[in-house]
Every structure is written in structure tokens, then in C-alpha cells.
Amino acid sequence: ANLGESPLAWLARRGGIEPVEMAAGGRLREDFQKAGTLGRLTMNWDAQPRSAGGGPRLEPALRARAAKDRIAAALAAVGPGLREMLERVCLAETALQAAERELGLPRRSGKTILKLALQRLASHYRMA
Image 1: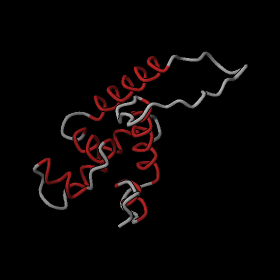
Image 2 (image 1 turned 90 degrees about the vertical axis):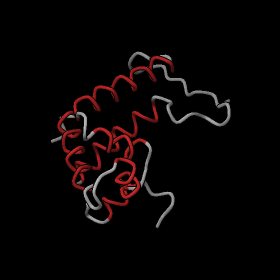
Image 3 (image 1 turned 135 degrees about the vertical axis):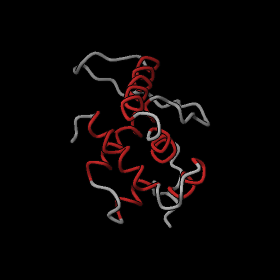
């Protein structure tokens, strides 16, 4: 197993999920990272790039708040019973078997539940 590989990437590489499902899960994960919910171990002293053009710039706190709002809307759209699998596999990057155990699911049911959740997520994002 590749320790740096996400559970979604592992499933996609083995044909366990469709590209649109992978893209939806990746978009949720990206918002999770933008929300700053992963935390930082050290201060980031790098200068932020400046741009003369482009759209309005949001302050970092506002960007994080907007990302958290998008996550909440996406998880609400997926609904209870499916959102928990997304939270574990896409956000916490928990392996599928471990997520099954944590959620008290029967063995080998996790992939089906994850696929349903990812399909609803793709629909919410208007990808499908």
C-alpha cells in the first residue's frame, strides 16, 4: 500500500469508483483543506503572491468560512447515513475497512455506501 495515497485515489486506481465520483470527493477534500480544518503545525511566513488583476480577494478567514459553508451544504445534500462515510473517507482519509468498522457497518458494504454518497455529492456539485 502507498501510504501517501488517499483512500479515494486507491479505489479509483483499482476501478472501484468512477472518475466523476473521484472528482466530487476531491472537490470536497479541497474545500476541507481550504477551510483550514487540517491545522498547521508551524506558522507560514511565506509571502502571499500579489496580483494586480483578477476578481475580488477574500481575506483568509472569509475564504475559510466560505469553504466551511460549502462543506456543510455538500454534506447536508448527501444526507444522513451517507455523509458519515464521506466524512471518514474523503475528509479524514480513513481507509474503507476502518470506516466500516467505525460506523458499525457490515464488511464489504462500505464501497457501496461510499459510491452512493459520492454520486449524491456529484449531483450536488452538478457534475453528474
